Amino acid sequence: MRNLIRFLLRYNVAIVFIVLEFVAIFLLVQYNQYQKATVVGIFQNITGFYHSKVFSLTEYLNLRETNEKLAKENTRLKNDLELIYRGDEIFFFRKEDTTYRQQYYMTSAKVINNSTNKQNNFITLNKGSEHGIEPEMGVVSSDGVVGVVYGVSKRFSTVISLLNTNFRISAKIKKNNYFGSLAWDGKNYGLAVLNEIPFHVEISEGDTIITSGYSTIFPEGTLIGVIDDFHIEGGNFYKITVNLSTDFKQLTYVNVIRNLTRMEQMDLEKSAAND
Image (cartoon, rainbow, N blue to C red):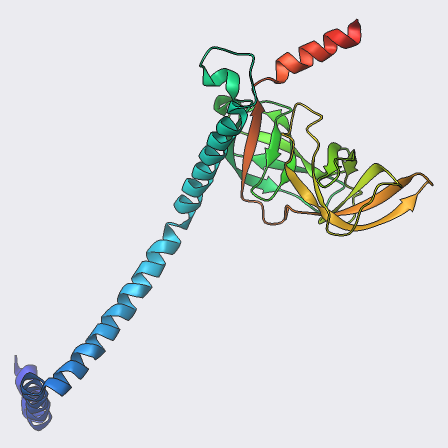
C-alpha cells in the first residue's frame, strides 16, 4: 500500500495528464460525428484484422479434416456419375437393381508412404482388407492413373506405382483409339513410354493418352497424360514419351477402384481360352 501511494505521489502529474487526455478524446468523439466515425472505423479495422487472423488459424488447423471430407465427397460424386453413366448402356437386365447397372465403385484412401526415386516404387495407403481393399484393384488420383493394389493387410495396403519398371498398362491415344503398352523407364518421374503404336498412325505432341479399358482393373478413358515427344524406333512403331498427368511427388488422396463385374469377365475369358 505504501509503495502504491509513493507511486501515485511520484507520477501524479503524468497520471492526471493521461486521465484528462482520455476524457478529452471521449468528449471529442462523443460530440463530433466525424471524429466518432474515424475512431469507429479504426476499431472496426483492428477487430476485422483480429478476426481474419483467428479465422485463418482455425481454417489451417481444420485443413486436414477439410481435405478428408473433400476426398470422400469427390469419391461419392464419382460413384454417382458412374452409376448414371452406366445406367443407359446395359439393356439385358430387367430387374431394377443398381447392383447390375454399376460396374465400378470407388473408395477414397490417404497416401501414408510413397517413393519416386527408385526403379521399383511402391505406395502405402491407410486402408486395407477391412475397408474392402483387395489386390489387383486400380488406384487413381484426381489427375489420373496411380497404380494397382499389390498387397493388403487388415488396415493398410501397398500399391505398385506406375513409377515401377515392372508395371505395364494398356493405354490408347484418345483421338484415334490406337492402343499400346505404357511403362515407366526408370528415369524421369514425370514421364513414361508408350510403345506398340504403328508408325502410320497420325499423332502429335499434346495428344491425350488414356486407359484403353482392355483390362478388368481400370475403366476406359481414365487420364494417363499427354504426348511429350515421339520418334520411330525399330522401323514399324513409335516410341512415344508421355508426360504423366499425376504428380507423384504431391500424392495425398487417391481412389481405389473395385470392378463389380471383374470376376464374371475373368471367368468367361478363362473359359474361352480353355476351350
